[in-house]
Amino acid sequence: MLTREIYTCHRERAIKYLSKAGVILSEREKELLEVAEYGLGMVEKIGLQLVVYINTDRYCAKELVLFPSQTCPEHRHPPVGDDPGKQETFRCRWGMVYLYVVGEPTPCPHALPPLERRNFFTVWHEIILQPGDQYTIPPDTLHWFQAGPEGAVVSEFSSPSRDSMDIYTDPCIQADMPRRV
Ligand code: ZN
Image (cartoon, rainbow, N blue to C red; front, top):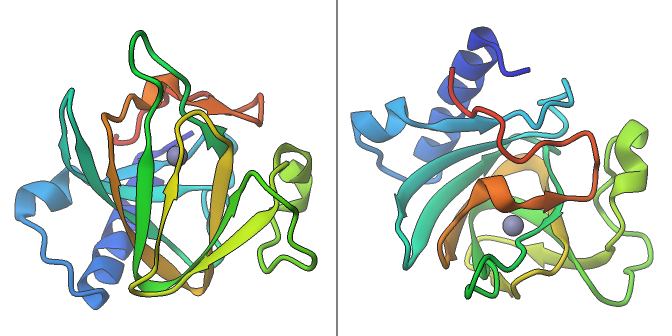
């Protein structure tokens, strides 16, 4: 569960990472920073910090912050009505991120998901993103990512984000949990 303590601590820490990456935020954006805890009680390992710049019915832009080796769990963005599902582009701004997508599994991947949830990470085609690298995830396809040893700041550009519709491989994760307390 996302407690006030966890939220405050992760928010402050994420603001420092964004500053290191040269990202300037308004006070309002800092206030609205989100912490995805995913309900697993292991937010240092499986969790994500986000700043949403804009999310309309036409497009979305966010900044994602991952602490060292922190992991965004495997999920996909399914079709909703006439929309084929969210298409997203990740661009690494600072640090390094190991991104896993559908495709030929990479032998000896760099990332290691927490062992207790390991069964819920099923796609293993590795893409390494360093500052200046970007990669686009097609709609409705599984993906997950883990920060390198220093953490990562990643910009996300996408079609509309409907986080509550996201489908996670791990059945213990609910998509619509609060991200601020
Ligand atoms: Zn996604």
